[in-house]
Image 1 (cartoon, one colour):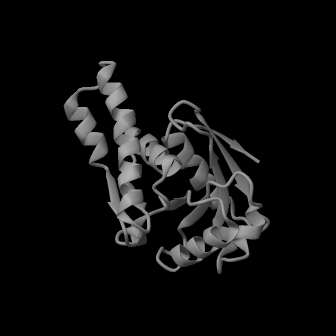
Image 2 (cartoon, rainbow, N blue to C red):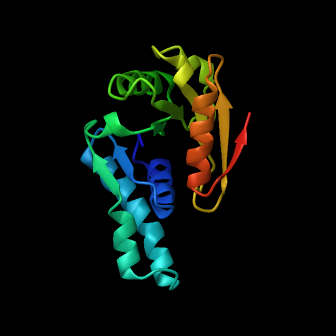
Length: 174
């Protein structure tokens, strides 16, 4: 997970809730705290409603690993980017991340306004890139839109769909 704001924290929560370990990266501690606070807030609501106990809450939150660096990114299958909705920032973050992951790792952007093909132009392996637009709030909107880029591999589409479905989302592929 790249970006630990409200969306990043929400996506991290949803993945962790469904048993998918998450590495949540951001550029400063304040943002990481925001992302972890968002995930904890959603878990605390479950606790207050009696849907989970403290042990479950602790177990879920412990699967989200906040970080300021790329430690562990060399072992991930899919990276979802949810940084600020600015093309220059997204391109820079995606290009940097591409250098830190395996060559077969799927990179996905949560953008809702920037063309996927525009973001893909910043990458050395645009065929491993797609859009993965989660709807907000992630925990209440069980839908993720998967957007193919111009240079696509079936595998990245499958991996994105698999992650979305693992997270309990209905994956709508375009």
